[in-house]
Image (cartoon, rainbow, N blue to C red):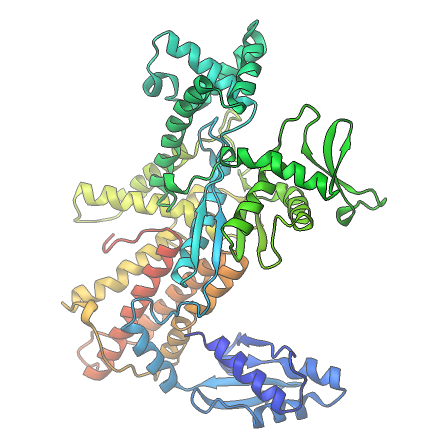
Amino acid sequence: MNIKSILIEKANAAMQAAGIPEGTNPAVTQSTRPQFGDYQINGAMGAAKALKTNPRELAQKIIDNLDVADLAEKTEIAGPGFINIHLKPEFLATSLEAANTDAKLGVAEHATPDKVVVDFSSPNLAKEMHVGHLRSTIIGDAVVRALEFRGDTVIRQNHMGDWGTQFGMLIAHLEDLLNQGVDLENVALADLESFYRDAKKRFDDEAGFADKARDYVVKLQGGDAHCQKLWQMFIDTSVKHSEEVYGKLNVTLTRDDIMAESAYNDRLAGVIELLKEKGIAVEDQGAQVVFLDELANKDGEPSVFIVQKSGGGFLYSTTDLAACDYRSNELDVDRILIFVDARQGLHFNQVEITARKAGLLKDKTSYEPSLFGTMMGNDGKPFKTRTGGTVKLSDLLDEAVSRATEKLADRASDLSDEARQEIARKVGIGAVKYADLSKHRTSDYIFNWDTMLSFEGATAPYLQYAYTRVRSIFRKANMDSASLTGRIQIQAPQEKALALKLLQLEEVLDLMISEATPHVLCSYLYELASLYMTFYEACPILKDDVAADVRASRLVLCNLVANSLKTGLDLLGIEVMEQM
């Protein structure tokens, strides 16, 4: 059920019948206040300006041709030409009754599903995952879940960094440790940061080691069996580190989703040859360079995009162009979503322009670098440890659970220690994820433990607690909500406000999917929980003086709220619990 889409379709038909040119935006929006109805059609003003006519008169013509008798109880013109739509309580009730018996709460699957590649997380396997990987991982995962919920075909791709010059250094260091009899997983790679730091120190200080590392890079890229074996050992152990973090974060990435840099190695030479043949790349100081006039600076100088180094080496640019070719021409996808740090915006602009010129991206394939801002500390600088080091993501998540455990210890509970620890895990991890996901993707945000773990305001603990409160009603009533059916009656204004919000889930998911912005779902869930609290206070449910049919109606509303909160949080990758 997407009320907005229904009204857009009906408004378009009415506007054409009123003599307004096809393609004019009907400007359908949700109303901001109840006195303005539930939705508004605001397109009359823009159309009247283009047609040089009176907007109120044009609005009246639209209303005269507007076929909404099945869903609206009243339409009216307000101000200079706004059309207010007041929905019928009966329409809302019938729609909710259908949603209550549907596994997806009335959210339909796309009539023509898209095939979408989503490139997210993408850690560098030379090091452990740190807080800088959090946003790509969880924003991408939330969008993936929403796409699949709406019926799109999603191909997850974890574009892990597993190639390049640094790996010559790492496998040379690994070889020496193995020759000394050091255990691989328990000692050599137990701490990837220390392993990388030790290898880098040898590269900088130890005579002969740098030459050996460079030689191993050449051999690795040339397919040398010994170097490839060492490299694979390092990669396998590094991937295990990442999988542990994904498990803690409750994200849907698996080993099968890895499409790392090395996967494109055999395509890179062909990409360069294609660019040269088409005259897109030219030699400049020994390197192969694409000069992009489309991204010229204010002095008219083209943007410089290097696709091959002077020594013949390939770059991220080459790999990303090869990825475009594979995804668009081989996988034949409709959309490519890439979740990357905002600082990489220029790079991906260069990739898209070059790829489209070369035919590496088909016209039908949408290329969407979904940029995100930075997690900041209280000092307004990128989040670091107290000593200024990089915060490991695994350590951050462990601390979140520990802090949640302390927070929950202050709350009275008759639950077992094991149950309380499981709740603390869900609260801690959920708090970190919601605090991030609730901010607009492109914004920087301040990381604050006290705010994110609060049981008040727009936080995961508040929403998780709201869910348990709704579920407790059914325990008090000794009812199984799974089999709950009944006619819904919408009489009180609080019931109507809650009903309308419940029916807007599909609209929210469509916006989240189209713009890759999970914060709109976070806002929706908080608004839903807040409206439920208002409804709960104003509309008694289990009191003795409540009529049986009214109680049954309100219990169905409660069930829909609980299922909507649970479904929405699950789409964000946040777990709920039945009791807290």
